Every structure is written in structure tokens, then in C-alpha cells.
Image 1 (cartoon, one colour):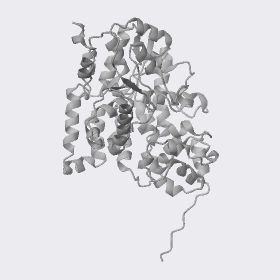
Image 2 (cartoon, one colour):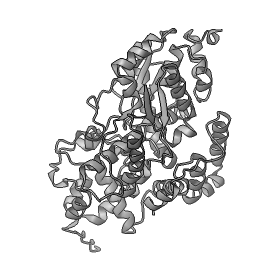
Image 3 (cartoon, chains in turn blue, orange):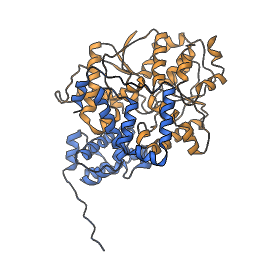
Image 4 (cartoon, one colour):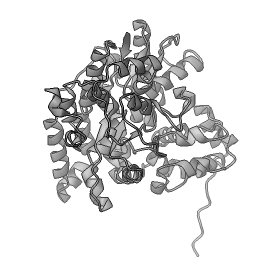
Length: 187
Length: 288
């Protein structure tokens, strides 16, 4: 029988997350109210209460590698309903940021590509321009090629055309005077 | 009445119908919307997912501009509203010097629907109703960001918001109560995980139909897009035809005030609200 890899534990991990985020994760007593109210557990690999527990237990690798933190739709139901004021949704954000900094391979690359494309888009002009954002997302995520091959790109093109016909897809973006300031914020 | 106005990026493009209906209705209510000078994107989900500092500083820049303008700040997009409120709390409550902007905190930030549901505004709206919108069986769908979390939004009825229900009553409609007012639609996951959004939106259709709704009224352009644009496709996945127009509450205010432009706003939707409203006899060819 192959020896099982021992689970790596980082005993200071919970402290690190708490210091970074000022979130009182230790107050979690596993009532699971967060998980029971979460609308996207069906797409998660670890439930929200388990994410909090694993952080407390120092299982850094496991939480930074999980899909849950990316699948979370940031609806804030968990944070709202936690009886101990644990800010679960903010923890998900802090973990995403840590995962990116640690260079962990993202298990939801399309989600990560969308967020990145969005920030790059506003860095350019100070405001988000949907037409351009969608294009750069399709290229960055590799979806353009996939959709080209399986033919579903037709749906995207027809949606774009419909939006244009309905006057909901302007061709030119609006930029702001304070562009430099925005670049500075997003540097 | 003059207020500062932060439209947000979507209202310049995909949510043009929302923008036009807000402008049209405010004109009729003699409410001056002073757009914030040189406002920038709030950063939305992308910023708070990848860059905490930017997620505070992007909206914070707008708050500094709003404070100079000096009026209450009205925000139609619940996402923008939420991010502006998060920045407000962070700048006022965290140690100074952590972020590049400072504010005194004198600007009151309003979610548009909550602003319109103040008693004095409701009275004003009611006084202009000439086309009571009877016959509409609407559920009001608020989504997440105008309510949650209450420590950020400062909202009392965060599990059961009532602003749009109140407005609809003044317009002559009888909104139907339902338990899914603040359930998430999946928001921007529609781009990267449409499978998730279709499932979440499908559940909302089911619940709305269960209580006998014939349309869904919204105050969020992300919810509107997710429920409207893909309705045909989601319906097919559910093995049924869903025919639920997804209408902005501001469009209904315009309709009840016989604002002629309402037709051009509604024509921008995917699920046709015009046929639906004609059937309810609410559009006698736009009041000849």
C-alpha cells in the first residue's frame, strides 16, 4: 500500500489570515448556518464552514487550492447570518488574494481570467467597457478558441449583435480624466 | 430636489434602459440628478476578489468627489452601492493612512430603490400616477447587494426588503410576497460559470411562477440581465416555456405616470414586456 502523504499543517495560518483581514475566524463554532444558507454549495468542493475550519486547523494548501473560494458568488448571505460575526465572504476574498500571491494554480481558471480581464479593463480607462471586457475575457481564458472549435461562438456573436441592435452595446468606451490615478490604485 | 448621482459602468451600456428610465422618471419628479464629476468604476467583484486595497480605493475616490459635491449620493446599481458603502466604512473605521483617500463621512449614500421609497418621494410619485398599473402580478426581486451585509448597507429589512413593494403599491399594483427576494442570481458568474447562473436563475423562475407572478420587478441591472437575456435558454433547460418579463421598477413608475418614452426603454429588453403590458391594457398605444 502506498504511503499516504501526511497533511501539511501551517499552525500560524489562521493567525496570518486573521491579521491580514481582521476577521475573527476563531469564533466559528461550526453551526453551519453559513453553509445551509449558501446558494452555491452545489458547485463547491468544500463547504463554507469547512473552509473556516480548515483555516483554523492550519491546512493552508487545501484551502488555497479549493474551488469554493472562486465559486463563491459573494452574495454575503453567510456573513449576514453568522451568529458569531465571522465574515465568511471576506475570508473567501482574502484566501483568493493569498492563493494568487502564492502562485497556486487556480482550479477555476475562467473565473480568475474574468476578474483579471475586468481589472485590466478599468486600468485602461477608469471605467469598465463591457464590449472590450468580453473580448479580452474570451481570449485570456482560452474560451474563444474552445468556442470556435465547438461552434458555440455563434451564440456569443448573436448575443453581441442583439445587444447592439437594442442599443445596449456602444462601440466606443468612455474614459475618465483621472485615468492616471486609477492606474496608480491598480498598479 | 437635487442629488448627486453615480450611475456606474453598466448603465452606460448594457443597462441603458435602466439609465434612461431613471432619467425620465426623475425629470418628471423634478428631481435633479447631478452626475459625479469624472467618476470611476467601483471595481465590483473583480477588485474585491483579487485586490483588497483597490476594492476600497476605487470606490473611495468617488466618495471624495461626492463629498466635495455636498449632496446625498444616489446609486442605482446595487453592486456599486455596496462597494461605495464598504469603502465608506473602511475609511471611517480603519486606521487612518491605510488607504490613500480620507473622507469625513458626511455624504449619505442611497440605494436608488430605498431613496425612492422614502415617504415624501412615495407621495410625490403617487401624486403623478395617471395610469394605475392594475393587473400586474409582480414579485419584487432585490438580489443581494442592496441588502447584505447589514453592517455595510445599514439596512434594517435585510432579509425582507420592501422598498419596491411599497413603490408598486403606490402605482396601483399588488406585489406578491415571496421568499426569494434576496436570493442570489449568480451575478458575474454568468460569464465564467453560466451553468451555475442558469441553475440559480431557474430556481427563481420556478418560485416566481409558484406564487402566480406574471412578471419580475428588479432594481439591479445584473439581476435584470441574468433573468432576462438567457430566459429562453434557461427555460429550455428546464423543459418549459418561461414567459416572465423582467422589468425595472423605474420603468413601471414611468408607465404609471404615462411617460411616453417608456416604450423605448422597454423595447431594449429581451423578454418582450410591451406585449405583456398591452395585454394588461396598460399601453393604450401610449396615450395618443
